[in-house]
Structures are given as structure tokens and as C-alpha cells.
Image 1 (cartoon, rainbow, N blue to C red):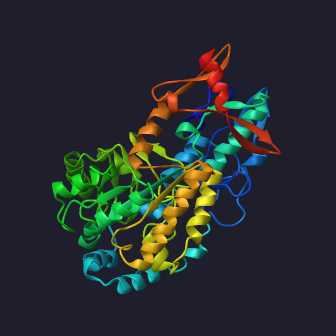
Image 2: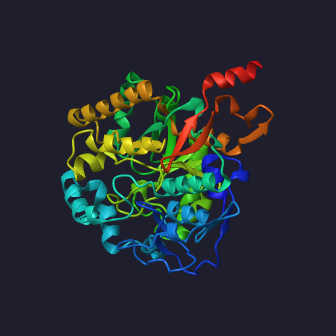
Image 3: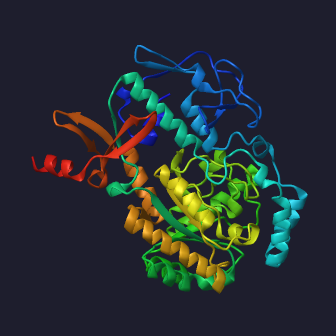
Length: 454
């Protein structure tokens, strides 16, 4: 029951004494864990709800602390996995094929004018703002559940504070990555200019490249990205919307996608249209994936992973898409401002999370959209300079998160220290309780310097 907490916080297990309160139900459903935290999983006691709406049972009332052990009516690791893998979205798990309407749409999509696509997409997405779960515009159910469990661990252990390994290198407050999905020949031809724009703000990004049918992908084009310090990521196979149509076809396509990954020297993958079936990811030979939205109300496939932190799906690290795509902002919401992005940034930074953006070179080549994009880059630069946000590439996040996953805290006579590759960039932090809220505090840098000198 401790796995989700130790992976998330990298804290010593001796502070975490959780045990099941009894036999869990054989069926999964919805319940809550305090205000604003929706959970999905098996439960001991009242059967969980089949729907996420209405008055959900609060697990807080069923928790017992006795002799330093916390008895829970649910398994936190099971709940975290269910939300991160979107197992609550049953209708997407059962479909073996796309609807006939969707097949026709994606067949015609490349030839449809943007104005026609906008009308069809708005019709498909009607009622999105009435969806109650995941919580719009950012859902932090997994993050808040783990916060409250760490608060319980503080209470049960009677410790003043619990040490952990900070989320980001060098004590960065949060992390931001910019990613560019290249969908058309027009977008491919704008990539050089887009790199100039990103470089002018000191931001390196990744370019998600479609290997087949959409446009010619030459070795010179890929090298033009890499030689400037940007990253190449494989974007689907041909972006026709059929990648997950059935498992046999997916495995055949995955084999070709993997071959392109090796040929491109790409460590990362993103599916077209953010379609995903996480239970099939074992066929992908990539180090990280970027296909899972935090909240997918405005995507063709609803759902959402309900966390603003990277997480492992087997051997693949998922870097969730935690903000609204540029195309959606401009063409579906008709919003040409930073308001929504700033709102999402603020919510993510409250959890010290990952701000992951998608900006298409196909849709920001015109002056109005490009102006908003440059405003966003300027805002990220301000966060980097004033708030200590780490602006980096997906590949760097992947490398760091894998190093952090192998680090451990060791206690000696002088206190706690971090062991493992990459420890020189890692920082110790402490979790404590203040007015019934979890407070995370970085160990002062001068304390580390004194220890190293001594």
C-alpha cells in the first residue's frame, strides 16, 4: 500500500505504516477522500458509487489510526493506478473499433478546411463544460490523495517532519516543457522559424514528427532540429486516428513506429489526437510517452490521468499533457488570451507539478496566434526567473525522473543524505503539518554546504 507514496515523494518507508482495514470490494467505483478529491477503486465498507456525480461516500470517516498504523478502507496504489490509467472510463476500454462516423471523419480530415473541422469538433464536444470529473481545468486528485496520506503518516508516526527527495533538480519550484506537434507540410516548413522564436526566449522544445504520409521527413530536417539542441519525438505513424482501432493493427503499427524511433534516435512518443490505451503500451519501445491529458474534456477521447506529475506505466514514463492545446484554445474556446493557461499554470504550480504545453507550428504561423504564443513564452521566462521554474525538454525530464526514481534517503549521525546517480542535483525537502495542511519545505542550501565541508 506504500508504493504510490514512496514513488511520488521518495520518502523512507519507515514513516509509512498503512494497512488494509478489511476485505476490499470485488468491483471498483467512485468515492471521495476529503473535499475535492475523487477516487476510483475497490472499497471496504459501503460499496463505491457507479457514477462520479452526486454525494460520494467520504473515506475519511472510515480511517482508523491505532498504535501508529493507519488502517485504510482502500488501496492508494490501486486508486492512483486506476486514475492514471483512466480505468474509470469504461466505455473506452470496451470499444474494439471506432464508430463509422469517426472513420469517415478521419478519412476526410486532411482535406477539410479548418472552419469545417471547427464546427464538427464543437458539435462533438458540446456539453463538455457539464462534465464533473475529472475536475476542470486541472485535476489533482492523485496528488491531493497522496498529500492527505502523508499528513496521516505524520499524525500516526508523531513525527514533526518527514524527509523526501524534492521533485525537481536544483530545488526548482516546478517544471515547464514546450512541445510542438507537426501535423502538416505547412507546419514542417515553419519549424525553423519556430525554433528561432523559442531560442529568442531561451526555451528548448521537442518536435513531434509524423513518420508517414503527412509530409516528407528527411534526415536533414531531423538533423536541423537536433543540431540546435531541440528534440525529435515520434508522433503516431500517419495521424489517421486509427492507431488504437484494434489490438492486432496496433501491434503491427507499433512495430513500425518503434523502427522509426530507432531511425530518428527518438526516446519519446505521442499518439495522434491524444488517443491512448495505456494497457497496450508494452508494445512501444520508447523511454517516455506524452499522450495522456490531465483533463480530456476537450479531446475526442474523454478521461484524464488526474495528476500533474510524471508517472511510470511499466517501463515507460508518462509526461502528462497538463494544459489546454493551442488549437483547442483558439478554435474551440475562441480564446485569444493567456487567461486559461495562466489559471492552469497557477494550479499546477501549487502542486509543484509539470506544466506541459502543445503548440502546433501549423496553427501559430499566423500573426495573431503567434503573438499569443510569444506572450506565453514570455510568461514562462518570468516564472523561470522569478519563481524558479525549470524550463527544459521532455527528454531532460525523463532523464531526471528516472534518476530520482533510483535515489534513496539514508540517515546517518548527521541527518539525512541522498544516495544514487544524479544526487548532486537533488535536494532534500521536509513534509510537515500546519493548520491541517501539508507543507513542503526545502532544506536550506547552506545546511548542505556545511555538511559537505564538515
